[in-house]
Length: 260
Ligand SMILES: Cc1cc2nc3c(=O)[nH]c(=O)nc-3n(C[C@H](O)[C@H](O)[C@H](O)COP(=O)(O)OP(=O)(O)OC[C@H]3O[C@@H](n4cnc5c(N)ncnc54)[C@H](O)[C@@H]3O)c2cc1C
Ligand code: FES
Image 1 (tube, rainbow, N blue to C red):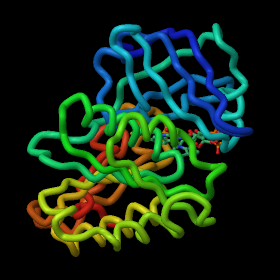
Image 2 (spheres, rainbow, N blue to C red):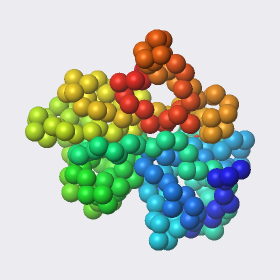
Image 3 (cartoon, rainbow, N blue to C red):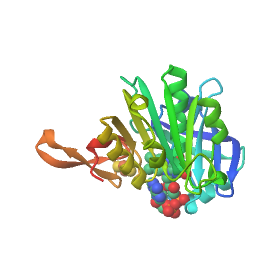
């Protein structure tokens, strides 16, 4: 397969008992991966597992992902040690559309903070003014806090526990933003479905263009099996909706087109 590579885990940074950032040597993905795209990573079990690209380093020829333990596949991946070999397929999916973006509001939650970091890094490189708002459960769950603080001049966070940043979920912070903060902003959000839906509704109310990255269960990751279809509005085609493949046509969609 054209974009399948044999790769080595070169760095493992443990973030907590069930979460780590893994960095792999793979010049091809380091060179061509864009924010919002994902990779499919091998594990001991049937089917590769999808992970959003967290960052790339073109000079070193590496890319990183953040992994949180869910089931058998992520458990095995998190037990890997530096030097271990994997097979990867990628970069996959469409990624975020940065054309016409003059100002960016990035919103992350759950494992969505990993791909959001890539978008923040890209905005910095391109000189796009950018605010990041991450929603965490608590201070102890605030993964990548230092890295976001170093990368983004305007990094805000919320915690359900209220022990860091604004108390509550990301909506508690967004509701405090004034019109001048928001004017001309493009919103990109990655996180749990309910969070993306709430942010989409809020962005619609404010008249802001908003992109979401949908996380459907996947199998092939390349558009062949149709496991990952989602409903996307299709008024122009004279239909209420069409089914689109999250892996190939997405995972990034304009929020106003998504049927939640
Ligand atoms: C586009 C995309 C980007 C993602 N990015 C990240 C990331 O950056 N970090 C992270 O930790 N996780 C991410 N996930 C979720 C991650 O893929 C799942 O947690 C993982 O596949 C679970 O595998 P498992 O074997 O541990 O769990 P199991 O529940 O044992 O998995 C069984 C099967 O269901 C699939 N599956 C289970 N949960 C999901 C899910 N949420 N999405 C897709 N397939 C799933 C698995 O791939 C596997 O084939 C992403 C998912 C998608 C679709
Ligand atoms: S996972 Fe097979 S078509 Fe999307």
